[in-house]
Image 1 (cartoon, helix red, strand yellow):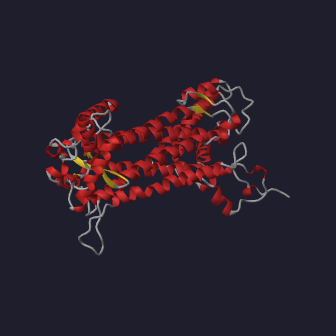
Image 2 (cartoon, rainbow, N blue to C red):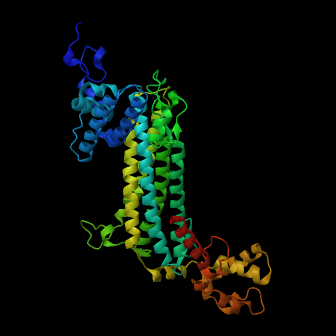
Image 3 (cartoon, one colour):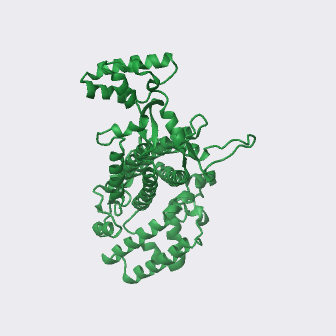
Length: 465
């Protein structure tokens, strides 16, 4: 059969006789999303061409022509004037075909000693590293906001919960600084993952390496990587870095979701511990009295996307034979989506905290209910009367039962009812049961005492400087 030149794909179709089915073109093209790798692709091509010139694989004239053309394309991309074409499939070929339009046959030398397989994973790694740095800065900004809010509420007493049941009195600042610690771990995970990403796949070519005498150490260093990857087959098929990124996003997203859950609960009419600023709230189309915490709820809902994107990529790679398969084209959309939504979520949480109005009186009133000093009193009995904690626990449990029958709190009981040890212990217990004193009683490292919170805030500020 005689080949129809019009039907030949300009990228890979020289051995084909028939034009691609439009459905194949639709599913095969990735330019709609991998155009986000444009600047990374330009950077990789610039460094690759420099290495080819240094190794005398291409001439100085060809190198200068390629560099000049790439610079023009870069400017078009930055200024949103570059026309991305689905017919050219992906970002790599869109740039290469435009380069050919600009400089002619010299553009065909650029793909020497590389493949789209090693090219795309190099681009993608560079993008992920940049994304991690941006996320880390966003997390830092949120941490600073939390620190500032905490500094204003060191002595604001707040009901701490276990099982979403009132448990013990804490400082509101202590609760907020728990969020700081979550975010600290998130940022640490992101930044430490760079160490594992920091190996350059460029030069692995399709899967077996190349016969050309290239300098992979040079390209690695020039692109900012620590070193080249060690196995060309693993290099082109590895997506661990994308999986780890999605995992870290999901963990961070789970923390933001927990924060959002707290905020949603606190704004509820049954609590009214906090009030959201109007610019991070919504109303109802039929209930004019409503002020809804949609900003927090939407972030809580994002967790479905974060976990879904992680599972999506895990499912893609779990059964792939070595080395590259086209399935891996599905790696970028979940990563881009998770990144975009996490960036937005962090910014929204930051805005929520900055505008959050704290209702100290409501928090204090909540601490007056549910016998939140029961554990404090048990500890006090152990320290002052040298009895075992289990014995003290049982004594306090009896007091709680008496208070429940009288529909009051243990601190509302009479001196006589509180005289559980004898020797006027009731008077001493009555004096002890002041909720304002609760947080000041704590002495352990990392506790809710104002002294420990000030130390934690000072340490956090030092870490962020």
